[in-house]
Length: 421
Image (cartoon, rainbow, N blue to C red; front, side, top):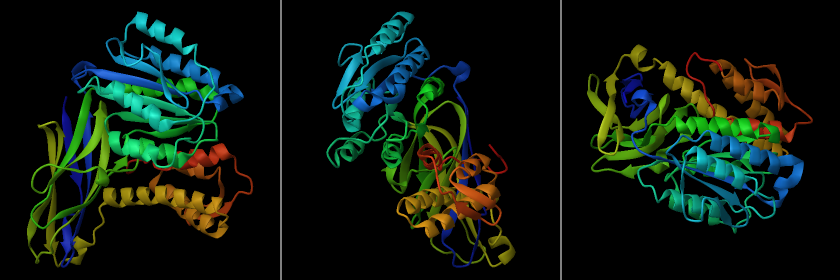
């Protein structure tokens, strides 16, 4: 598996400047022949609360779970969990994982037919059972799919305590079906578990969504990949964020690894490329001073897969120090875009139309400038965009809940410099 890391930055700082920014692009070719470096485990968690009976959601969820099972490679360990007021293992026997074969996949498909909607929503308990099952296979590429249609019903703080305990131990992709679930709640789970969150507004689209998630999971060939950042004496990491394909703040997930070095979890990798924004505070230097501001390594365990350097050079030449690096500027804008959308949605819910209009206007401007056409199109379902270039928008009087939730969940999706989507 070949990895490369390339840093994009303007290394020239004005005299007195102490902030160094770089975008590090990490690219992996995937393992040779697509073979995994170790085992893999999958858990499919289906919400079976009473509300899933509405609008044919339970029937669609059964079809989606079957579609996902059909995508699981031979040899992968897996289980199906029915999510009610507790977590109930549907297949195989409680406490066990099945090994994927044509026979076990057929058995799991038959078991899925027994899923019925009659219970509550207890996302923390569901995740805890998934964690217990996956813990049997340390070293595996561990992944779960979680589907829900409503708000969590556990006592206040329980879900947060579970996420604190198990965060990052496996990747969990979360999907909400319909419009009665809470975006911020599922985003909290996805962020803690290094996964994704999205809305599936129509039950009939669940099977395609599950197929896509499981196919992507089966393409992961390396498990616990991390970004290792070393900084020199008197320098500190201000933040580390994934900025492409979506914005995710990794700063709080740092674990110390010896003097002046920290590791940030990147989850499982296949053949893909991601971008990270690294910001380091350094002591100011005199004109002509140079320093290594950070050494950024991509590692799996103690194995260094690739490395890139972030530099700082102080200059009294304003033409050099004020030159804006295109990648850094682009992703700073993409992060602001996500913040503006989420702030606009909150303001609109609070009845503050003026702030909502300002925030959505800024979002439209940023989406337009960066070529993020997918986000611009989502914004157009919530506001009338009179002039995207100037951020002139008007709030729509009537907005479908599904459209607003789609804008919210997808607000963190980004595009690369010079790319539209």
